[in-house]
Image (tube, rainbow, N blue to C red; front, top):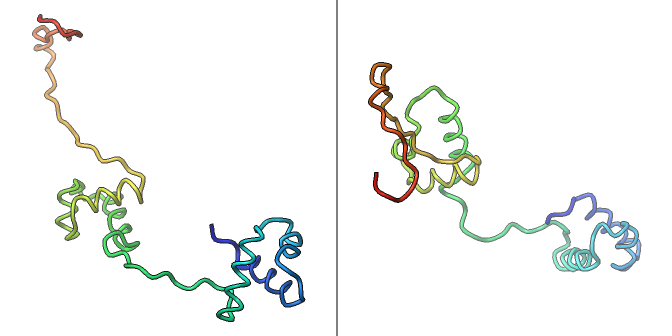
Length: 137
C-alpha cells in the first residue's frame, strides 16, 4: 500500500530534526509502521530522495488505458458490432484481451444473446408442456 507523500515528508522532517524511527512512528500516531519508516530513511540515506524509484518490468501493451477507453466507447455507442470477435478484429487484438478488458477493467460480463422463435397466437395450442425430470415422456 502506498502511503501519502505528505506522511513521507513529515517523517523526513522529523528525521532531519534528529528523531529516530520509533519516535517518528509515535509522532505520526502510528499511522505508519516503524519498519516502513526505517525503509523510507534507508532509501533517503542511500539515494538522497525519499521517493520510490520506477519499477522495472515489461510495460502493458494490450490492456492500456487508451485501449480500455476504446472498448468502453464501443459499448456505449450505437454501433451494433459489439461481439467479442468483431471487437477483436476491429481493434486488431485477441478475443481473450477483449474479454479481460470487459471482465477485469470494466466489470462487465460477456454473454451470448440467444434468439428463440416465438409462437403466434394461433400456434399456442400446439405448444408442448415442459416436463421436468429425467424420465421419458
